[in-house]
Image (cartoon, rainbow, N blue to C red):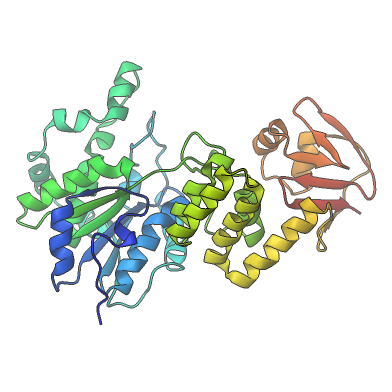
Length: 398
């Protein structure tokens, strides 16, 4: 039996920035038609983070109410790269990389969404763009003007800075918009930075005699350290594929000012309970206690309550009580003087030298209880030396 939803449901209020239009959505929710809920994801990277998952969890609620998730994996559009929020042209990915990324994304998406065919459909936009004739594409172009497409903020900024804009980037919103026509989207849930592209989708649907999709945008939050939104390249994200230990440890790095917004966006803790937590912090409560609850809630959502409880106690043992983890890794390293960056890479604790330098600059590396900084280029390593990277990654030299 289809669950009843209304505009007052938490689904349509929690972290929601805008609904275009609310009247259209209210009418569709009152109807008996199963809604087709679109989510488009380009395969520029193999990993999703909890910022991406905001859309997925909202779609999961709609699935439970009987509506269908239609996931559009942009294998074709990834070859162009969405210019949204980019100050320069994205590098073109080989198709083999795109295919590999799509396989990884599919696994992560299906950790959250229901996969019964009645409420789940996964498509690739190469299904229609790969077969589209030139004359069909030209017909699409005649519906949109250059001045409409070039008005986007990031394009205006690039022109001011004298940076190049490829024609493929200018045309990207046409491709994303046409996805909505091909899957007959009734509702799309997006970050607010995608609003322009999905307005193009509404425009095209009307031109193709379809009811225009409702657009629901959610607020974009800063990454762990504030500033820009979550991004793997900036190292300020919590990944869906992160281990429970990494998810917990990363959450504990969140700025105190972001604790409440993260609770609202990235957990299913009731809003009334979150209000009480905020009031407690405002009265002088210890933000660390609330942050522990946030970390536990996030890990529980992706790995289960028992795992989350274990990670909480492990974290408290290591950092509150200064214990080493019971399963500390042992590594074989030559005793003597090491370059700090080379040491971290050779120990397998860091993937690249650039990442090692970044963590050193942040003061996130400790050797035998001493915090290493960028200027500390040399360190003496001996048998039994303890190396810590970040808050929860330890190794002992054997």
